[in-house]
Amino acid sequence: MDIKEIILQGKTSLGIEFGSTRIKAVLIDENAAVLAVGSHTWENRFENGVWTYSQEDILTGLRACYKDLKAEIKWKYGVELTKVGALGISAMMHGYIALDENDNLLVPFRTWRNTITEQASEILTEEFKFNIPQRWSVSHLYQAILNKEEHLPRLKKLSTLAVYIHYLLTGEFVAGVGEASGMFPIDSSTNDYDSEMLAKFDSLIEKAGYSFKAAQLLPKVLVAGENAGTLTEEGAKLIDEDGELVSGIPMCAPEGDAGTGMVATNSIKEKTGNVSAGTSIFSMVVLEKAMQGYYKEIDMVTTPTGKPVAMVHCNNCTGDIDAWVKLFSELFETAGAPIEKSKLYDMLYFKALEGDKDCGGLVSFNYISGEPVSDLSEGRPLFIRTQNSKFDLANFMRNELYSAFAALKNGNDILLKKENVQLDSISGHGGIYKTEGVGQKITAAALNTRVTVTETAGEGGPWGMAILAGYMQNKCKGETLDSYLENRVFKNAKSTAVDPDPDDVKGFEEYMKLYNKALAVEKTAVENI
Image 1 (spheres, rainbow, N blue to C red):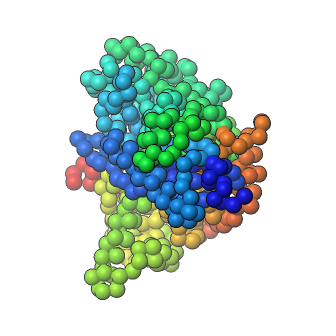
Image 2 (cartoon, rainbow, N blue to C red):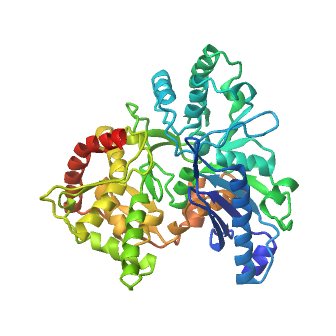
Image 3 (cartoon, rainbow, N blue to C red):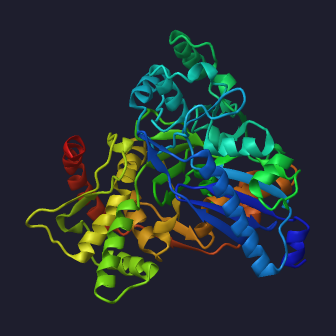
């Protein structure tokens, strides 16, 4: 069957993911091969002290992304896209979408990027004896309770972005277990919200004078492979402004970008993990057993099948690098010798590999926003050098790359050195890995672990979401997601692996000594500038 017929007969799966800066749609066939891609660029807004996207941004972005996908299919294959075999929605995890009984937003969407729930996070972590990060939905809810926000008596549903969009499209208020694990702690033995922690939270709610129960607010939890409803007529119109997309399409459970990243990198088995590096950066390591302790730097979430995962999430990654590259680009333009941006990134990244292993005494903080892993509610991008530092382009760029991974390294050092978690390999995906070998080499140095990048990793989370939709629709009876990925998706995938260079590992360790000492300077900058 040729691709035209595959599309016309709906033997496809579609994943749509709402990332921090881009909404992306990926259409795949039954073997997970990419047929077409659509995208739409968007940006969060900082309004009244809150990072947010408006409801109009969300719906307009969904339609624009799908329209771009349709246009590519029409251009490449000469056919109209009117149906798909299965559909899945994913998005940046966590945050706070509060809905009333009529499903209206009670307050503007509060994204993961906000660092306004420190008080709630600390109380819940102590109460649960389980790390509850600031960006988690339950932290946002409890902070609203502590603040006695006026909308709470009308609160009927607590949602994330992915759950909300899925609900608009299907009428089903459900979450994939990986997405749910970023809302409230999950018990991996039941693949549902932890009952003891629910009871503790309900007690806190009652003491605050509110009558609702946590379980009444939270979406129903589903695992990968379960049907999560079908696209309604209203939902189809929300996606396709031309009205050509048919209703009745089966939909899988909405997942977070962490879960789709694990799927897209085949990292859902024990002792494997992945690093997603873009605007933010996070690592996911699938555990063989529970950790001995709990740490503010490490979140416990799950794979889309419910296995426990240690997650180190940092709010900042490539934003500071992007700002410097923009500055260098302006320099070349001013000199009358403009360079294509992708080539400029490659040139600077490869130059970084020429730098001293410890960056010659230079250190940077890439904190555009707050960084909870470093105990900072706000960020101040900062570059520091002494009179005797070796200040040249190679060291500066190596320092910028180290800085992008430094907070992540601090969190993973607890996991790998203190908890002695065993890790066979890490898969990398995201923009920082586009320059061949450089991002891998830096990641391998940071984590002292082999790092693999597959040729499909560039499609990232939306491809992973499409795979989850395809798994729901195409799996054989009893076929696990692990088996589906191994035998159908990654069986012939091409990949490159980089082992850690001992000198790089040693150099990064030296860099971190200066980085961690200089954190005091960053904190002073936040307090005074």
